[in-house]
Amino acid sequence: MFTGIIETLGKLTKIEKEGSNIHFTFESPITNELKVDQSVAHNGVCLTVVQLLGDNQYTVTAIDETLQRTNLGELIVGGEVNLERCMPANGRFDGHIVQGHVDQLGDVLSVEGKDGSHVFSFKHSAGENFTVDKGSITINGVSLTAFDTSDTGFSVAIIPYTLEHTVFKSLKVADKVNLEFDILGKYVARMMAKR
View 1 (cartoon, helix red, strand yellow):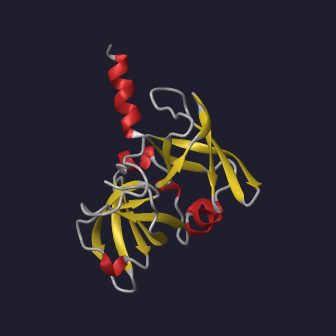
View 2 (cartoon, rainbow, N blue to C red):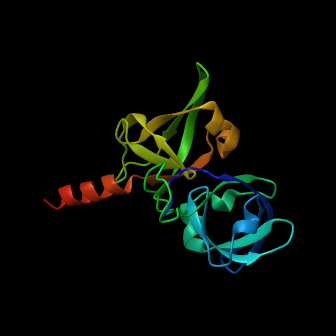
């Protein structure tokens, strides 16, 4: 389980295809704290560390199902991803419950500077996934609060610290983002639908 509080950025140094799988090698300042078989969220996607390398690098593998549902297949060498390790059992819960299981891709509709912060608006396909005003949403692994919600979109406000220390700093209109909707909301919606 994750919380959506990004620890650091990882830089993609190598992409290696094997069948329908892709092995991604990243360089990060937390590599020396990782171990093989550890789960790490990459832009909100839970991936398992499969190899530790020198020079602060490690490798994870994404299967075809993951590549189809997320923006990981669009990564390029030199690009960055948001990184978060699993929350320790005795850790502080600073964000919200994040599983690292992307529900769907969203598109950046607009990016607007506003009184020292930035407002990002997103669209997504309609269906069982939804947001509510002041509810939680995870975008590329970042725990945020949604507003201006509809059946197919929402907005979030990003403070300068988050903008500078996550991949939000490089997002532009039409970029694809990984969306994980609030798990509690999904359970409530499922129960209500069965009534």
